[in-house]
Length: 281
Image 1 (tube, rainbow, N blue to C red):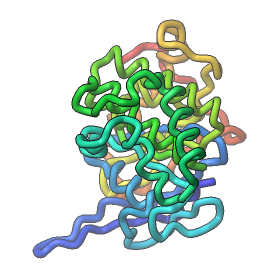
Image 2: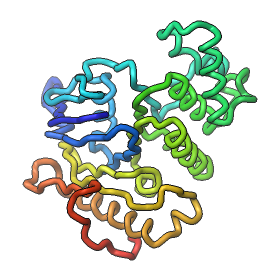
Image 3: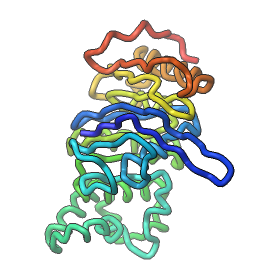
């Protein structure tokens, strides 16, 4: 569904050029939920903007369902970290969710149906007349997610969407994303800086190097498909995977894309991963 091929991004300034992404390649199959994690400042948001057609790469390409992305694709929706800035304070919840549907010109009845369904699946059916400023941070982010769901995307990109909410709300939203992913069959790329979140949510975790960024490892997350915050996070395998990702990110902080190290592929069907340490860092 999504192919990132030899992606490179250089920011050109008055006095110097900064290479943010270097020869970055990975793929996401249809219906997969993949998390992307790496050191702070490694270019995760730059990558996501290139994939969403919001930023033109210096070299390489992004393909959505085999077609080059050269602008915001009609089959893709994005949920950003700063949910407060993506919602319009003078519009109620219903109007915020319905806003992107204006482009589709679906008619009032179909628009109402999509908005009602989206609000229902994120648990905001009773808050449709409220305004964003009347809602908690977690509820505002649910509005942003509902807006993406109502758009009926093939691909959902999420840029650290839970970074600004409290731990309890974050756990609830993580479970909501997995629920929506299963029910809607949408392809999800979830960008996060939280290691636990990257292991808990995804079927795979793509680990990036520090800038200039390459893929350091593509790790299969072999946890049971049915997950919950209590049992999954307390399992020995979760601890092993978390420790491995943590170790890779610590190594990534000292090795950027200018090293000769080849990226490690741990996707299903590849060579098995080495035994992971059972001690959490």
